[in-house]
Length: 638
Image (spheres, rainbow, N blue to C red):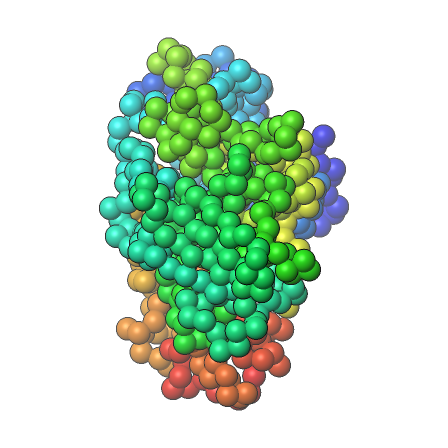
């Protein structure tokens, strides 16, 4: 069902042009506008007939951007173009393409517009490559527009695996170097679809375990989340606080295993588990997946930037990860994890390419993913390896029909994210870089059939069909309710930013991140985030950083020592140990630096609810508490 019509706020046209990022007013002439809609590339394409071409006034989208975004099903302002269109179908100028894909507007009133294409059938997806930047009528009328739109995966398409994709698209081989491909690895067996060359310390934690490591689990705190125990390689001074130990070792067969022993009851027989997979390792942390029967479970976390001198248990080198699944504090006995806590059911959907889930008669949860001859592991027992990391089809859709199609028909049978509207393109990333709960009532965003969203799906369809809770709970945010506290919530923050909703340039994740891994910078960034150029390539009015700092904050710091990201990319979220200590607060304790960037892109101020009056060690990291401000920031006022 299409969203209901928005009220008068978004229905009224503004007399002035409102820009989302740069400001300014300009008068535009009335102009005739014409063009053509095609799929494919410059060389291989088909004309798209009977598509509706809409002109969405930039002023309406800018006005929407001034409203607080609604994070809920059937929201009226969380999809800038689709919601604007839903509210104004009777008012916006539109025309249809003819059999040759051609369209024309005889007289377009002066102004700026997003050009949005709505295909006649589901063969194609809405948006088009001209839908992301608002164009003035002077540009729109200067020459015929060439609009490229994305195909859609046919209903009968099946997954074929990344190896099959790379056979034809050899130029994307570097995708195998991205962390999306390296997230889960089989210990001692590197897949041909995994290239670790960019991450020399990937298995720093694993190597420590293989060399032999004994951990003491003590100081149980039932009020905490996954790290209810403190964990140490050294026996704590209070031996009575130890519940159990876990000793990792390389067995005679060369396999990594660990043995749990009950520190409170020596008569309780030790248990031994094989460790088969690593989970993470490229940046910040790595966990280890062990097997119990048919199921895999994660255990212990290695923090690459951890420091055992820190009092905060979450910032030490090793951190408990669900040791409470292996020991029952009520019975004081060793235990096995519950089947319902398996990795297949709780975590795998955002990692496996073509995820499926089946509950067996024995009560186990068996995940599936597409077969690939170079896959990492045969997880479903059919004798064929599976791709248990993200693959090409995660973002482009199942490729079997595309693979067998005639060359001229290929573009219409696969999703091209760069030809989608920005809001649909970002949703591909957003389904996992947010914190909704799906139909399994956990953090896996799956529908009632335990399937993940196909690329090109609208945000509202995702929320309605794939979630039972739209995003994070209150505990996943800082006290201001705006900035994310829990990790992998970049999209959660991003849709609140002016980059997502404005009247100038609608930004998608891929504008800054190279999804195929071409870039040489961390986090697949297209430009070095340590330089101003990563921002000023778009924000050309802020190239004078010294003037910008003085205007915005009266800051006189040496501009050679800071850059845009120091203030606008505050790392409010923590996934590993964080980046160490911030300034010392008035309580004599230090503030912390976290390791995951908020994508709100604002500059949290010192009067923020997450900071003002909050104990230093529990406060939200903000630029004011970072070490760079030691010479001029007075934390005693916080």
